[in-house]
Length: 158
Image 1 (cartoon, rainbow, N blue to C red):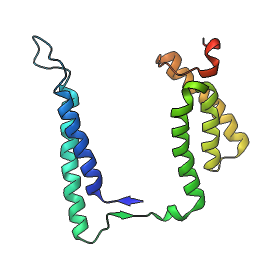
Image 2 (cartoon, rainbow, N blue to C red):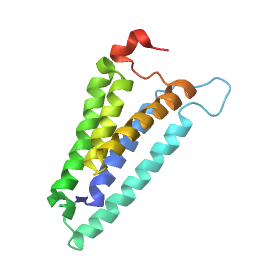
Image 3 (cartoon, one colour):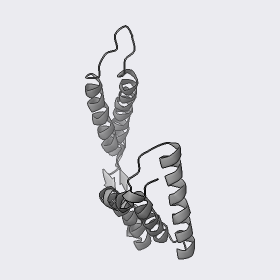
């Protein structure tokens, strides 16, 4: 699928404006020239500039005959579409189920389904899903101290 650059440009432009407006509410730090709004403000200003440039580029391409929206060749491929849908639905499933089910039980299932959708052999997908889940859990939960949901394993949390 191909979207005209002007569409993404408008999205970036609006996002940059919203962030610029929001950072104005950040508190000022007494006695300092630089406050907590500086870096988000600079990044949002960059988003605004990039958005304007994309809108200009997209409108030029539109004048040259480019369409607003074009389906890519892979959209007609059942395998590619299935893999795309698996990733999209897996992300939604994680958001909804991570709390009640828990990361350690849900992540290997999702990783296995995703790899199977992309054509990885089942035995290899299962092994990588389990090892990958444990590695991700260790890095985020133990090293970075990110609180991952335990779900049904709450009583076994360590």
